[in-house]
Image (cartoon, rainbow, N blue to C red; front, side, top):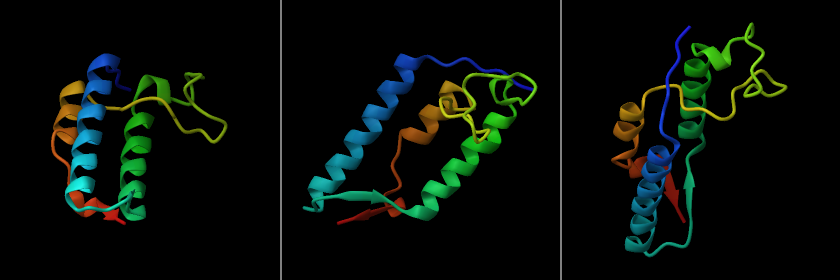
Length: 99
């Protein structure tokens, strides 16, 4: 079982930066909406679920309040801040439908 600590402020900053990149692309394409492709959402959810099962807060023995009634951790990124930064510093626009 692993444990990791991340700065919430750093994580939020990365999310906002990533969202701004998506919104700029939306404007550049002169579209009105952007939607994550279902297949990409499912892949990312699987990554989170599998990663969080390896963490202390995702353990069934732990009884963590971060685990919902379906046994899924709903509040954590299961890797390091550097890993999160690497995932969010570029946007793969192929993962979206621009409408």
